[in-house]
Image 1 (tube, rainbow, N blue to C red):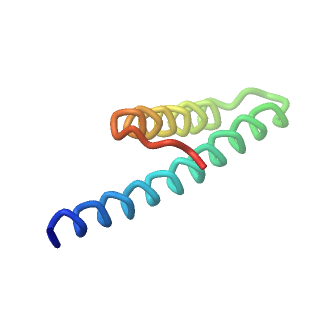
Image 2 (image 1 turned 180 degrees about the vertical axis):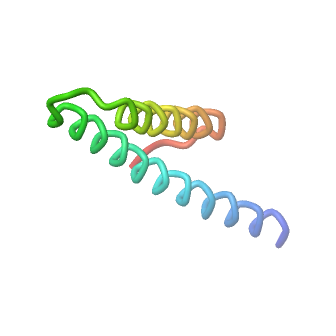
Length: 72
């Protein structure tokens, strides 16, 4: 019995860490979108950073969907 409780507790801990990481990555993605809109001339590095942040967020989103995690 103790093994299942520990497994559930670990899953909950990692689910919480995944949700917090998703929130941080979403904030980073939104910040990079705002920065790209503020800058007048298009800079390839900013565009690459935005695309990378977006890809990371959607990867984490997909992982949360696989793990059936609901946001708070």
